[in-house]
Amino acid sequence: MQDGIWEGILKTASDHAPQIKVLFLDDEVEGVDVDKHNDGWRIRIPIPRQAITDGIQTILIKDDITDQLLNSISLVSGDPLADDLRAEVSLLRAELDLLKRSFRKYLIK
Image 1 (cartoon, rainbow, N blue to C red):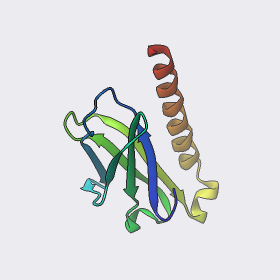
Image 2: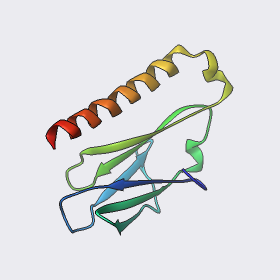
Image 3: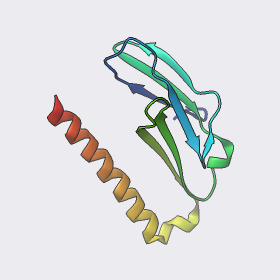
């Protein structure tokens, strides 16, 4: 993330630009940009100002056609989290989900 913009690469088999919907607190995030990039699509998502606050905030990235969850962005900030066990468990779950997706992708190839 740089200058309040999260950037990622989505690889698809299609030559058509993916229809992406980004949600924060059930509201659609405006200004999402999707461009062709090498063998995939570069997705640029402006992080809403309301998402930068104490606690854990999650931004969901979905396929707008199938409503399938493609990924999520978790923002963790603030001093109150230093001793918060729930925050640690949430981070561990997010990392475990990331590992599971990576292993599944590796096994499918």
